[in-house]
Structures are given as C-alpha cells and as structure tokens.
Image 1 (cartoon, rainbow, N blue to C red):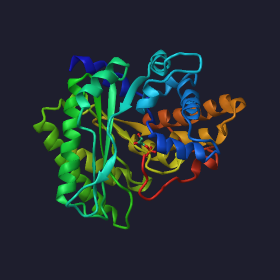
Image 2 (cartoon, rainbow, N blue to C red):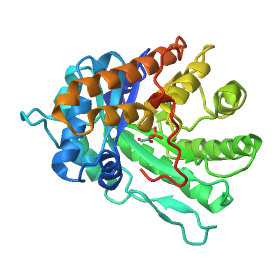
Image 3 (cartoon, protein in one colour):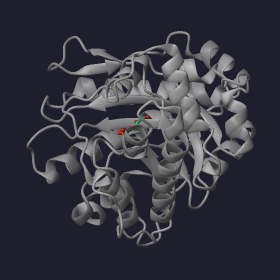
Image 4 (tube, rainbow, N blue to C red):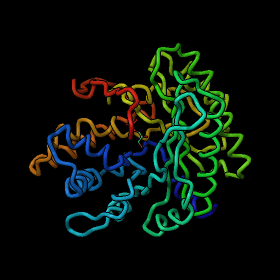
Length: 337
Ligand code: 13P
C-alpha cells in the first residue's frame, strides 16, 4: 500500500487530470485514418510522441494512460516516453484489460478479459515505470443489463483491482454504463446505483484498499449533472476513495469540460476530475494532420484543452472563445477503445 500512496496523491492533485491515450492499435488506427495516415508503428509512435512531449503538459495533466506498445516506446531521439512523463511530474499508467468479448448465457452482453497472467504482466509494467492501471468493462442498459453481466463486470473489476494493488499499481476502476439507448435518465441512475453497489461489494470482498483506487465513470449532460451523476455517486462511493476521473464518452470537447466544471461548483467528498481521450485529442489530431510543421500548433491545442479541463477541475471554467471544432460531438454507438 505504501508503494502506491504517492502515485494516487500525484494523480488526484488539484487542477490536474488524466490524458487517456491507451487506444488499442486498431482504435489508434481509426484516429490516424481520420487524418489520412496509415496505421503503422512509426505513425502511432509519432502521434504519441507529439502528445507526450508537449512542453508544460504537467501543469494540467497528472497521469497518462498508455497502451502496452507506448509504455515500451521512446522518442525518435531515444528518450523513453515514461521518462518524458516523469520530467513533467506526470504518472505513467497502463491499460491492462484485454478487451470485451461476448458473455455466454447473457442477453447479448459482454465481459472483459485479462485476469490470466495479470499479476506477472503488472510486475513487468511496474518495472517499466507504470504506477497506475486501467481496466474498462461495460454495462449495456438496452441489453438488460442482466444480473449475470453486472456480477461479472463487478467481480472482474475487483479481482483486477486487488492484483494491481498487490503489484504497486493504483487501479482505475471503470464500469462504464454505456450511453447507448433511448431510456430515461432515471433508468440510468437506477442501473448505475446497482452496478456501483456491486462493484464496492466485491472490492470489499477482495480486500481492496479504497484509499488506493481511482474511479472512472461516465457522466450525464450539464443540466442534469448535479441531480443525477453526483447524487448517484454520493449514494454509492465512500469518501475514502481519493478521486473520480470521468471519461468523455463521445461528448464534444467543450461539453465534456462544461460538465466537469458543473460538477465542481460545490465541494465534493473526492477529487472530481477528468480522464479524457476523445475530448482531449480531437482538435490536436485535426491540427496536426500528420505534418511535422504542425507539431507545435497541435501541442498548443492540447495545452488549450488540458488547461480548460484544469480550470473545470477547479470549477472556474467558462466556454467563452471556444472554437466551433471543439463544440462538435463525437458520440459513436457501440464505440470500441
Ligand atoms: P473517452 O474520453 O474518449 O471516452 O475515453 C476515455 C477512456 O476510457 C480511454 O481510456
């Protein structure tokens, strides 16, 4: 436990949040294809290098979730990415789940693989410099969710969290309630309460230390934020948990920032911040276009988003002067990471 204390304290530090760039190679390929680039290791490395070497990033970003390939990569000058992060006081993290597959016996639902060999992989990731981990599983409301799918999601998260802590990694616990479906928000609240209560039940059964985990939920839209998202979390998440880092889930960059800002208008029992992928990367990619001469401008656009979310973490953001691009939504039904 003492091994992980400094990591979660750094990650949950005021005015900072997480940059999620742990897209699988296939998903990173989709991002690259959107600007006409091939999905090669060189292009993935170039894109991650742009992001991870942004000067001043550590002012707003406290952690970066990496895909395994990136954890072991270096800049074109031979500097390890993990060292670039450490110099900015950013904690390196690693996605450890092995993705979703169909759950037999359920209502077309899925379960998340990756527990086999997780302890030894975690030991290796720690040696390479990772200090926190991410495991994303999903719950689908239109598909039920069935009791089986909820139990499997919660149990898998709890086993992963225990194994991570045992190996010096702070686990991010992410049961994502998918935004897909036409149900009313009251139904989302009901399902979210059920899922989080099972998650905390199994976390306790697995002797996971709550002070050493971080949560990553999805959120509702600005008007309903205080009423639903925070009400649900306050009912289910003990104040011992140090931080709740929201995912952006396909909202526009500005929407995701406004929502975070709304949730920080009054004091919360936990550090409420961001762990965004799409809502931090969209303008960056469009600005970069794969051209070296655009690198600096793209890094500046990353800083603009990171700073906006830093202000939102402090509850001090205003959307004045935001670009039209930043207001475009990115929701994709059944999105895979
Ligand atoms: P989005 O912010 O694009 O939803 O991604 C968050 C995430 O879980 C990736 O780690």
